[in-house]
Structures are given as structure tokens and as C-alpha cells.
Image (cartoon, rainbow, N blue to C red):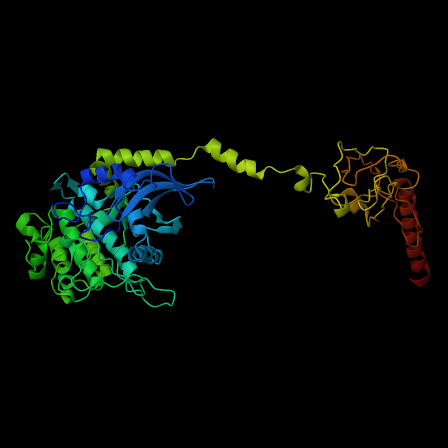
Length: 529
């Protein structure tokens, strides 16, 4: 990952003037980080993050892999640090803040997300999404050589990058107006490809946008890598989103051919202004004609002849892939990433992933230890715990729970508001029906009224001795309830008279009623018939 945000002409450029840092130089600078910035060392805590491994180093910034501490699970992130010698530079500090504000306004799957901007002492830092993979530059470059990717894979990576750039170009400010973002540093090092085949545009360090804090580009100053700068920027005519489209044409040229269209260094500037470069079919006779048309249109010297937006270029690439029947998915890109990653890069990614993995036992112990509380602080409906009255919360809790005996009346309830040592006062809520008595709830007291002559359900409540303290939080013990085997007597108010609900009374009564009805019918026929 190369989120350094360095300017062109800074130590970020190598001795050949290509504007890209070689793998050897990157490793040397990473090893010299401790001398250049003694505060940025492995294990150092920056804000709430712990630095793990150096990822990249530029002229004015360093990028480390890090991880948040003190919050259980945490993702591995990329932490971009301003070098201490530039922390006191107000202009660069403003540029750093502008980069964070621009990146935070863009939300797209193909743009590297920013999580946080902060300061630790006099050290500015930015927390970004870490991509487990490599940059497009790392995939095509081996030493001093550039190895092209398969055309369909190169087109897929370019199309996804165009989608991220279009999201940046369309970003709105808090007032709802376009921010007018122009990346101005679209190049292979700033296009990241994960091991899962996902493409991310990164490093808005020299981006142009509305309402920036740092000063505008001065006349004669060129920001960006020489091999990817559009002619209008070299001529000082100003740039818009079409400058990023031009740079994406150069990126597609490099990814699919393994060569830069205008060379590298300051010598490329004259060729860019004249628009002199070799067409793809001149380098490879079998280069796809439809893909060449896309490259040529994107590299047009006149901005009006290019694709007018990155999304228009993306659609052209998608149509070419569809027309050729080359459907490229993330898995195809991921396979190329795994094949092209250098051994050093793979070891670095593996080390960062291993350091970022959480130990389940340690996380569980950390999180569960925070949730352990006293039982009396978390009463539930079935725990038997009652919140004590305010006047008794500071008193010592009872050392044991006194269960209720079966001989005690089930209608007796301890009043939590009484003073300790006072006798318990029975509370007898009425039960409206036998059904309610048969289904007691956890929050109610059941009273059963047995019918006359039946065995008593429970003995009379015993008075609690005055000298014996009973805690007001004492839970109600399990009480065996005895219900009558027969339903309560029924009151019949018919002309037969009150009868008991028993078969020995109902049989004679029924026979008498039938006989009376027959007699009445016979009398009616005799006299009235």
C-alpha cells in the first residue's frame, strides 16, 4: 500500500524520475524509519492504535499497519503518519487535513475508506482502510521491468478504478454542492488490489477540491507523476475530472502493455504535450482493437475528445468485456494477485494478518469480565430477587435465604416496606375465579378457598417472632398447593330448587321432571283435547 501522499519532485521519486518507488528503496526507507522518526517504531502507540509493521515510506509521510487497543475485536488498519520534520509545517499540515476531508466525503466500494484523523502530541496521523494485497504497480513491476497483465484482467481493474474515481468526482459537500474533486495522482501505485480481487483508489494527498485549506498550486508547479500528467496541466490551463480520465488511459496502457506511453521523467513532458506515443497495435499485433480504441480516446490531447467522465470510460470497458465474452469476476483478479505478489510482499501481508488475528479465549475473557456483576444488581422474574427499599440498600445483605415452609399460609406475603424485626403482615388478594387460582403467576400471590368440609389447604399462618429478623428481600419459597378434586357446588335456580352438583341428586330430579312433564301433557289432552 502506497498511501504516502508525497509531491512530485520529492524523495518519493527515484533516481530515474519515474515517480514510483522501487521495491529496494521502499525496503531501505522502511528500515531507516526508526532513525528518521524515532517516535514511529513498531510497538509504539499512536492515539488508540498500536503500530505493527511499516508498509511504505514517502518524502513527507510514513504508512504503518496498526491495530486499535482496548476495545475487544479490532480490524487491522493503515496509519499514515506525517514525518516529524514536517509536522511543524503549517502548509503541509493543511494538505494532510485536506486529504482526510476529501477522502471522508467519498463513500464507494472502489475507494479506500478513511476512519479517523487525529493528532498524538505534535504528530498528525490518519487512519485508513488496510488492503491485504498489493498495488497495481507491484503486480506489473519486477525489478526494472514491467510485465503486462492479461488484457481482460487489466480492463477489469481499470473499470473498477474508474468507478471509484467517478464517485470522487461526484462527491458533494455539506452544502449539497459538488466539491469538484480531481485526484491528480492517478497511477499504478495508488490503485490497490486486494487478495480477494477488489480494487481501491487511494491517496488523495494532492487532490484538488473546493474550499481547501492549503494554498492553490502556484504557476509553474506541477503536482503528480510526470508519466501520467495530462497536457493541459503541463501548459497551466487548469484541470478538471477529465485529467483523471487521461491518467486512467495511461494506467490501462501500462497494465495491458507493460510500457509507459510517453516514457518517464521530465523527458515525457514534451511527448505528452505533442501527443506522441506508439499505438498499442504497433507494439503488439494481436492487441484487441476495441481495447485500443478505448486507450486512444482516453489519451486524446484535447480534453473535449476524451471520455467526459470516468463513468463513461468505465461503461466503455464493460461493453468491451461483454462484447468479447470475457466476463472477469473478482476471483479472476484475485488469482492474478496471488500469482504476481512478490515473496517479500506476501510475507509482509501474512505477518500483518497474523498480528491482527484475535485470540478468541483472550477476547472472551476480556468481554465477559466486564459483564460479571453481583446477582442482586440484576434481578429477573425467576431469580427470586427483589430490589431493596432505598433505606435498606446500604445494609448488609442476608447471609442465607429463609425458605417458606409448607405449613405457612400461601396467602401470606412479606411486606418489603416494614422494618426489620416487625411481624409479617398477611396480605390476602382476592381471587376472582377458580381458574385464576389454578394458574398462579410469578408476580402474584394465590389464595385458594376450599369448599366446606374439604381438607384445609394449609394451616393458619404463623406469626414471625419479633426477635427474629427476616430480610425484606427473602424470596417466596415453593409452596405445595392442594386443589379440591371436585368443582365448587353449583347453585341451580330452576323451579326444581337448589340442587347439589352430584349425580345422586340429579338422577331423581331428572326423573321427577320427566314424570311431571308427562303428567302435564296427559292432563292437557284430557281436558283441552
